Image (cartoon, rainbow, N blue to C red; front, side, top):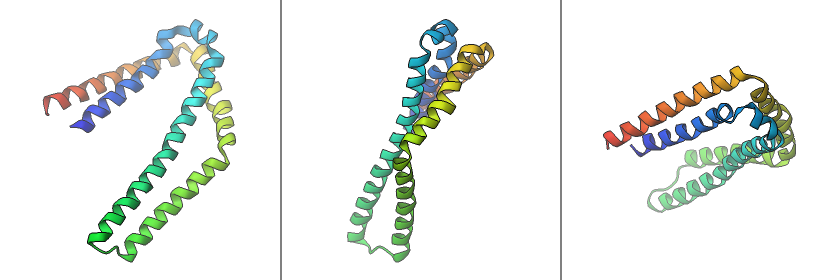
Length: 152
């Protein structure tokens, strides 16, 4: 039930970010446009960096566990090939990210963050829909946490 509780918390966290533009209003968004654009850019890059760090931790733990299991039962060739293929694909994605970091950040800045903030400032319906989405996510998150408490 911990996973249900954690999912509820995550949904409630996301609901805040959906509701915030409507709560703050267009006047505040206009004043903070440059800062919000920078924040959205850094936030999305931060998510990508966390994924990349997750890659390192995942394969470190997988390697340690495979090594510990190999002391008890031998590792088959199929398992090693499967591990190396997954490791190779993840390493390739990691290197693509590292070598294209500036391009990725520029893309997020020009194609995602800028237009998103401008649409949130100019479009009241978009802010209203985001608020409704936030309310739905908050409710689902609350219910998930409530069920986790009831069934644990």
